[in-house]
Every structure is written in structure tokens, then in C-alpha cells.
Image 1 (cartoon, rainbow, N blue to C red):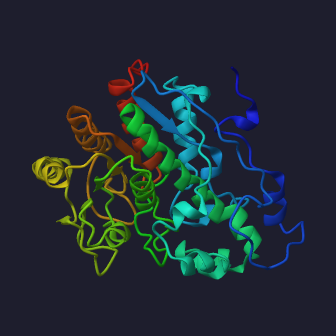
Image 2 (cartoon, one colour):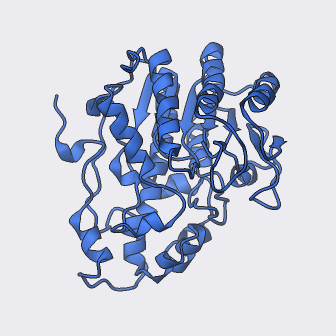
Length: 366
């Protein structure tokens, strides 16, 4: 059955958000209820199709913050999600009807990880602006910051939850967002509001779908929030491989941390990862793996100093995903960070490779 345009993953956002951002509509500065009464008309939830029955892709346009261009002032390119999706469609790796469109995460699901006090604090635009390192957001009325900013994180977090459930069904779940690994139970941080990784794991544990999980965090910045979310919990093994001399400072303590020096390139990085993975899998005994596949390990990233190539990052992700498939352990892929101009293209190439190898998508035409 053909899907309506509003039910497609790339459905347009509501005009009201643009009018509000431009100051053309009045809006009271009051706290708002949890969700779904925002002035934006959100994309509908939609069912997709797992490629070859083995790889499911989750995405919708509501993943992206859109403030009439002001979001471009931040170093993180929130529009990379849409760029990756459109390139996958343009190169015929996927069709719009293949893509699963997620609902927003629910309050109940968020409370499996975050505190009630933290959720209440998101009604203050200044707090949201601090978490996202964008003071201009703090000057917005709270309804606008929720509709245009926080709701995007709710939808992206819902995408990670859905991708986790799809991975349990078909083997590999890829969400074209997520990886908000700096968010802690009581606070956001580092452009992260909700810790989608922790929420997805807790939701599947609560539903009895899994008992044990493994987080493989390969973003250049340590997954400090995820480590804190699962501190003292033997059911979730946290592994972070990151540059040692950059944010966050101080670091949290994962079950296993590997700190790399500035300048580490493909050969040294992949050797360290290859040596660590067997022991990590053995210790975790996981029924689900969540891969935080941040590509800010790329040479020239403005917020880090590692020196990987695009091909090296594709090989890095493949090492983890292929090992999960070999071991018959479901794996969820989240995109994490990446602040260079070409970050989206590197992650597109990695996802494309996964679709070709595990979803039997024909290779891209040269």
C-alpha cells in the first residue's frame, strides 16, 4: 500500500514552527505538558520493511531541529540525518516505504533512566539551551523550545527504542540519529538531552525482551553519561574507546575504557579495537549490542584530534556489526557525533556498506 506524504519519513514540519521562530505568532512563556500538544504537526508513525528481512532502518524528519536556520550556528549538523536519508533514497539503497517511522519516546520510558526533576527542568528554555550549548535557545518561550528542539530529541529517542526492538526481530536496527551518550540520569550535557541508548536498553529489559546488553561506544568523546546511567549494574556492560585528552573532563568509569592519544590513525585504532572486542563480548554475554558510531574520529574534526580516514571508519563499524551478526547477537546502530563538513557522507558510506552486506542491497553504481 502506498504511504501518504504525511506518513513518509521525510514528511514536512508544520508551518507554525516557522512562524513562531520568526516571531510572527505570539506565544506565552509558560511550561507545557509532556508531549504531543506542540504547535508542530509531527510526522505520523509508519511501518517499514526490513531489507532482506535482516536490516531495519528507522528515520523521520522530526529528528531534526529546525529554527529557520539558527540551528546552523551550532557545531553539530542536525541536518546530517536528513542528508543521509536522502542519499540512501537517491542511490536506491532504500525506498521511503522501507523506512520505519518511530513514535516519540513516552514519559514512562524516559523515567526508566532519567529523574522526574530532570524532566521538569526541560520546561525551562535556559536549561535546554545550556544542555545544547546554545544560549540563544534560552531566550525562546518554553513552548517553542519544546516544539522545535526538545521534541526532536523525543522523536530520535523513540527511534532508538524502535530500532532496538527491530534489531531483536531481524538482527540489525539502524536509526539515523541517536547516540546521545553524554546525558545523565539527572542532567543533559554536550548536546544530549535524553540518553536514548540507556532508555532503549531499559525499555527492552522492562519488557522482558532482554536481560543483558552491551554498549560499544566508538565516538571520539567518552560515553560518560551512559557509564553513569549503568554504574553498578552488572546487566549492562559499557565499553568506550575514545580520545583521552579532550572532553569530558573528568571522565566517568565504564566497564572498559580505552583512551587513545591525539593523532591515532586507522591502523592503530583498528588494531586496538580488534584486540578488545573478543574480551568485551565475552565479559558482556549480551543479548543486545548498541553501537554508538560517532564519526568524530575522522581526521580534521574540529572538536577532536584523531586521524582516521573515511574508509577506516567504515571498517571500524563493520568490525562491530559483522561480529554481532557472526555471533547472532542483535545490534542497534546509532549515529552519535561528527562535526566536520563531511561527517554525514562518512556515516552514509558506513550505513550503505551494512545494507549491501547484510541487507543484500546492490552495490552503488560507480
